[in-house]
Image (cartoon, rainbow over all chains, first blue to last red):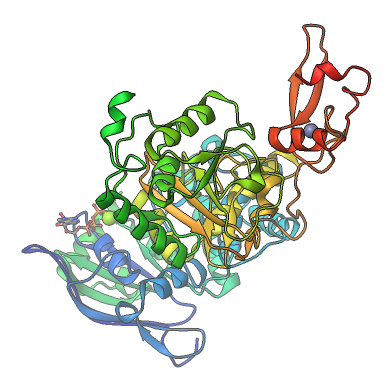
Length: 258
Length: 293
Ligand SMILES: Nc1ncnc2c1ncn2[C@@H]1O[C@H](COP(=O)(O)OP(=O)(O)OP(=O)(O)O)[C@@H](O)[C@H]1O
Ligand SMILES: [Mg+2]
Ligand SMILES: [Zn+2]
C-alpha cells in the first residue's frame, strides 16, 4: 500500500425525499485494500455503494478518485463521458444478480471481450485468447466460451461477471452482495476465488454484504451501517473480535449463533 | 388518386418541407447522426418507404429527374408506385437510367453506375438504429452515440465470427461515418458499402416509422466495421451476369424452372439493360436472344 489513498470520500449523503439513504459518510480507501460495508437490510449499504460508484447521484458530499496519472478528480465534477470511461476501464461493478451485469444473450467470450472491444481492441484472435485466459482464471472451462450465460449455473454466471469486469485490469471493484443468491458451497468457492484474484491483482474493492463471514474472509477493513449512518469503522478483525458499538455487538453475536 | 391534384407541389405542404429540410441540413452537418423529425402520414403504408418519400418530397423541384428502385429494379410494385406518385404530385420527369437521374430513391441497392456530383441518393430506411439489436433502450443508444461508445457493434461482429467462423452479416452492415458516428446503411447488401465511401453524390436516409433522417455528404469517409484479423469483405460471385456478362456487380438468383434450373443476373436492371444495349452478352443470351424479355 502506498501513502496516497485511491478514493477519498467526505460528507457523502443521499436522501430519498425526506428519507435517509445514507448520511455523512467519510472514509479513505487505500490501494490494495478491501473494504466491507455491512449492516442489516435497509441500512443504506446499496445506496452508499451506488453513490460511490457514480450509479446514483448523492445529495451532498464528494468522492475523489486518484486517476492513473496520479491526480485526484471529483467524480461528480467529471463529464459523463469520462465517468463512463472510468467505469468500464479502471473500475468494475459486480452485481448481486449476474443478469444485471452480464449480457445474457451473447456468448461468454463476448461478455468477457466486450470491455476490450469498448476500449478499441480490434483483433478477434487476441480478444478471444484473452477471454479464454480469463475464463480459466475464474474456473470456467474454455469449451464454454461460445455458450451464453443463460446456460450457466448461478455460480458460473457470477464468476463470468467477475471475469468480464477484471479483463481491463481495473484498480477498483465494487461488489454488491456478490454471493447473495448462491448456495453455501458455491458461495465458499466464489469467495475463495475472489480472495485469490484480489490478492494476485492487488485490487482495491468495496464489498457490500450483510454476511459477516463474507466480510471476515474478504476484507481488511469494515464499516457497519445502521439507518444510513456509519456507526462503526475499523480493521475487520478488530470490529468482529472486539466490537465497540452495542449494535455491532448484537450483529456479531447473532451471527455467532447461526 | 384524383383528389391528390389539390395537394401542394410534391404532396407535402411548404411548412412540412421546411421542417424536413432543416432536419436534412442538420443531418448533412453531422454526417451519420440520426436527426429526429416529425414524420408525416403519407398516402402509403409504413414499410413502403414513407421516410424516403418524405425526404424526396422535401428536396425535389420541377427540374429534377427521378429514378426509383427497389431491389435494384425499376419495375417492382413499390418502385413503380412511388415513381407514379411523384409524377402525379410533382409532375417531374422520371427515368430508369442512373446517369440521367438527379434524385434516385432506393430501397435495397446503390446503383452499379458510379454516382456523380450533383446526384442525390435517397434511401428508404426501416430501422435506422445500428445499436438496437443489443440495446433496445432508446435513451441508452442515444447516449452511446453521444459518447461514441461503440464497443457493442464489435460484440455483435465477434459473435458472428465465434458462431460462423467469419463475419456472416451480409446486409445492413454497420459503417463508421467520417470517423465519428456508427450508421446502419439499412437493407443494402454489404456489397454496396464501398460505394458509399467518398461518394460524389449526396446520400440521404429517411426512416418514416422511426422518424429519423441521416446523411452522408459527398466525399465523406464511410468505413465498414471489422477486425484486423477478419477484415471487411464484400460478396463475390462465381459467374458473371447470365444476361450481360457483367462481373463485379451484385447478382440476384433467378429460378428458371422446377427442375433446379437457375441463373444469376444483375440486380441492377438498368445497368444490365444498358450493357446489353452496348453489345455485352452473357452466357444465357448467347444462344437465344429472346430470353432477354
Ligand atoms: N429508490 C429509492 N427510493 C426511496 N427510498 C429508497 C430507494 N432506495 C432505497 N431507499 C431507502 O433507503 C434506505 C436504504 O436502502 P438500501 O437499499 O441502500 O439498503 P441496503 O442496506 O442495501 O438493504 P438490503 O440489504 O435490503 O439490500 C431504505 O430505507 C430504503 O427503503
Ligand atoms: Mg442492498
Ligand atoms: Zn447483367
